[in-house]
Image 1 (cartoon, rainbow, N blue to C red):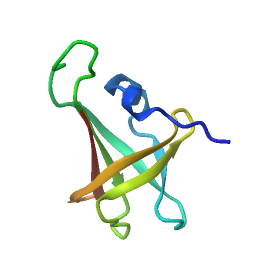
Image 2: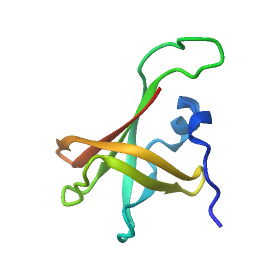
Image 3: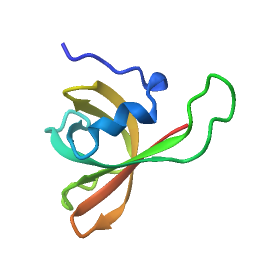
Image 4: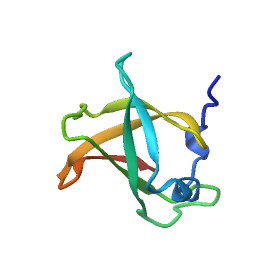
Length: 103
């Protein structure tokens, strides 16, 4: 059984070591495909005590895999399984990019 990551406990530092690694993405029972974590960036400082700093993750997939913005199941060998809201933000020279924002 795949462990589930606790979304509201994840911090930017949890994703930094996973930069340039593959995640499996699953949508509505469709066949899983891979996307790569290509950027982890801070968005702001902590807004209150015991809250995490806001950050975003940028993933890249194949140009032909353009899902709608929605909640997707992502799996990673080290992190486990998590459900996150991904938004397509447009292609670059290497594929389609997606963003997840954590506040």
